[in-house]
Image (cartoon, rainbow, N blue to C red):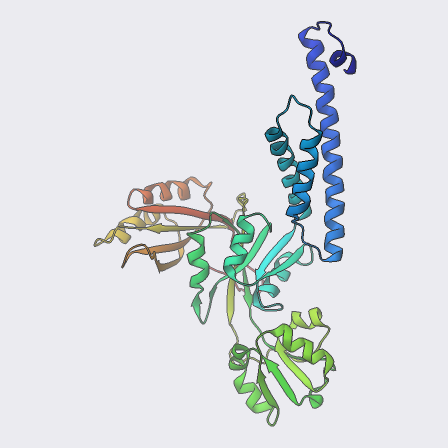
Length: 372
């Protein structure tokens, strides 16, 4: 191959192709070596708590390579090719970065841990929007966001963001929210003060009034802040989920102290990929109809004709026009099922806008906590 490049002799097509194949083989081997080294760098960054993304380093790499470039590749082509390679490296480094909205040890964090166990790196984001933005920019592979609660209803912020970002729902998870009393000793007689989020105190007001008379109940902004106090002070207990005990090294004093059982939150896992049929799926869509009598009924008629079960229908203002609404709908089945795809095609004829948000396995567990 080197001989072909250095000589002025003419070679036939097969010889030239053979030389290109040899070069391609070497390129492939070197790319894989580079990706492997990139993965090791990612592991070191995780150990040190360093961000995966380093724009300054990327800029240095591209400048150095362009300075070495003697052609015939242009500098623009060099930048393009190595940007692709560096993007692939980042994908490998963050293969299991899972984002969730805060607070730490809050409901979304616990749900993410339950869904993914410890098979990834979990990243706290300040808001649900930040989770969507991070997944959209591929800074995270997955995001876990709350979408509805059995007592408080739909999480409108999450629904609104689905119409703004082009991400897919790839899984759902229903988590029964329970409140546990935790402390560093696990002994109720040591407790003189209890720190908790306002909503946690509200959920457990009856139990606290009956069991913890004379104990100071103090509101705090995050469960993480409460846990840090409890770790240092044996007289302090916190109200949090049982999983928080493992996160912060606390012990359980009493479990399930909420006044009303059955407080369930539905979470969605968002990503850029699409899921194959599992045999027991849901399909989620968002659509807009005209503001005319019977428009919604006509849009839903294809679903009825197909014999599909609609398990959720929720409306949200579009904000583009007064009294105009997005409708979020979940139906049983997968988009690759002809009954589902044909029904959605039929709906489009009666909609101003229709977007498929994802088809994914329907959640079910032995406690019968499920949707639909």
